[in-house]
Length: 613
Image (cartoon, rainbow, N blue to C red; front, side, top):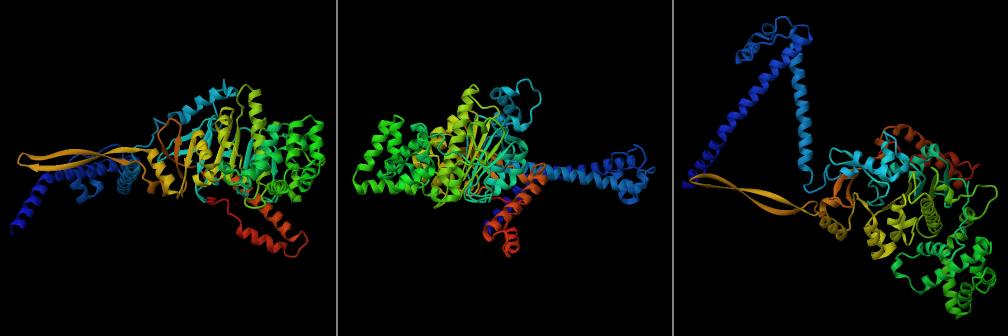
């Protein structure tokens, strides 16, 4: 009984503390309601021709309205207009309250400790425009700049903006799971908004289908599709041996073929290293001796063929010739093992459909990287991944194009203007440039904006090794981490990088003197690992050099102005790809071609919806 009485007394005491505030709340609600009726009715009377004749602001006015209606208070106005004025006024008040509440909830729910507008000022429109004028001399003297001329769009600061852009000296690394918005929110917008030359690698045709028509308006479109990803007709060729006249160029090309079959560059065994040395000598001999890729394949098939050794001696590459001869004269088991490994590295060139793209053709234009980087042309490099892919060829052409950009930048005084955009989608599968981590920051200083898209940190480590992936991570000045990162160790590290923030917890105590309040502080993680893993699709965690992490919302291409025209062009391109693919499968005169086209169209991605691939 004593406990019940004590509880009742405590409840009465608590109620006594709240009683004054209840009176204030009731008075405030009454004031808002009466004020809304008074002002809304008067505005309704004005709009219906009754003039500005407000009734007295008193409780009697409200009582008169309830008993006699609006005709007595606003005799010169229409009663319907007065009632509508009151309803509309309260509707506006409710809408404003809902809007303010949503803004407040967005601010309250936003994780504390992340960067805000002030800290990201250098990436906001004014700051990025000022930086663009410093990096691009061609913009000097112009008062108005298009936003795309100032930097690369990243997204909008969560929850209410503004838009954030990276500068033209930033290089980017994006980690997102499949179907998290890499194509629609990053690759496609980056290609569409590019100011200069564009390079895109991919193992799918989705980005190609969406962007091809728009890029054709800016310049020439080169499509390198040796494995029929988009089933584009062969309308170009690239001299794969063009940069192999030096040992460095030959070694780089050999490295790309070796990397295409070797998952971890930090674990090169004897056979891999020896095969790379042998391929370097053969590429050099073919380039210096004006031989073809088919001649090179013949040399690989017959280690006893002395043609490459003689060609190297003829051009005074004696040391390289001696090294190749030493390999040929070595133990038969060792020699055959080295040559077999080398044959496996360039096995894709045995496919006549692939080798045709890198063989001179007098009837087709030659793609020249050094000319490409100076204009606004677009190069699409498409290849399958897995066994038999043309990844080595794709990596070689991508590397040659980016290095051509470096040479052009040096001739321009240090930086390309307009900058070149290189989107390395599926880089770990179709564009394994072995020393990409070492070149990353150098590309940024030359006006070559490289964006590498990976599905996870571990995927990059499998290609470049732990040290290489760490170097790539450190060199990237902009990092975007999207939805679906399931590597527990990596997500835990990111949570630690984001940091902690102070949380103030109030505590109350009662005594005879009254109620007192005190605060204690603890540190919580700004973004716990589970929250990073559960980032919604279309959002990303932004890690920029020198700035606290921030949450951003990506800007998918299909939600931007002009998306309707782009979507229509994308549908037409997809239909063309479908028809070409069906003809390749069935033959142009096969009776099943119409059935095949309809089947492909049913399975095709609907590009005007949310293709978050």
